[in-house]
Length: 414
Image 1: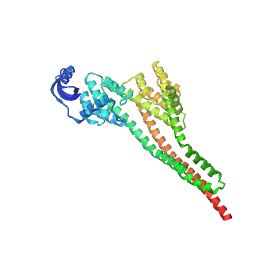
Image 2: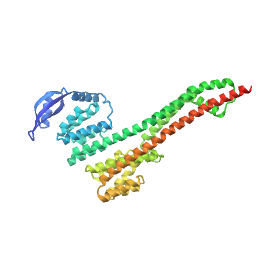
Image 3: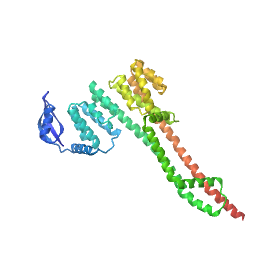
């Protein structure tokens, strides 16, 4: 199927428009344009690299799928560009066509192409985006739908871009913060394994030749080294087996709910995870309300993006309470899951009539708190890793030196 560029007259207004359309031949392209109440004045096959990539992407999708990861940052950039184009007065279909030229991701190009084609055929933008759930989340689709209904789509898109950019920035900060401790942990583990499987077996041979009585610490290290050397394959299989069992357990609904409940009880991590959930809850709900959605539909969307099944299971009670006319803070407090600060801020926002802005402020507070807590944890973990590795290496050195000193003392005594 080829891609054709066209210029045409709009039947209802008589204005000129331009764009692209896919068809098997020029005759079919003109027929599809007339069905859209467009009368083509020029029609030519597109040679643009962006459209060619889309055509190849669609062919690849028919053959079995388009590979390539779409990051949050990619979607944020696309969303901001889309909002800017609409804010500048460019029509919706032409804006989607312009986005095709501005992205280099084949998977994203193919999605935009299909969305533009469906919108060109009369579908809503939100419905067209909803057919690509791996790229556009339920939050994204529902906010776009709210923007279409309210007539403020460009403002909603720019607000969405800010949310996605903040998410991408927070994720990047967390990765960069945890990268060094993760490297230190892997390095320490590698050093310990090397000492146990390479150095200790050679030392053991020397001690075995002497037939001397060894100190307890030396015998303990030799036993540990022998065990690791003999059964390391079983140890690796056991680790992978436990991981596979855990994955199977959390893939089931009941297992995932119990695991998410356990996560909230873990020392340090539980509090950090709850703050992340509260930040996501507050920012999403506040943004949905700012976009024009009422409370109940906004809570429905929020429930789909919370990354904790245990908390999600209590959201039905929250929605039921709101449906009966109760203030949001009351059923949230009754769940016993959300921190007092969030409850008090929501109560204050409801009394003042500024719950949307209050929720956004709460989300900013929790995001900042997560970053501070994470920095503190990392600052604590780094010396702990160094101390643990130092203790183990020190024990290993003692296990080696003590029998050597004992043997040298015996030699002097003789």
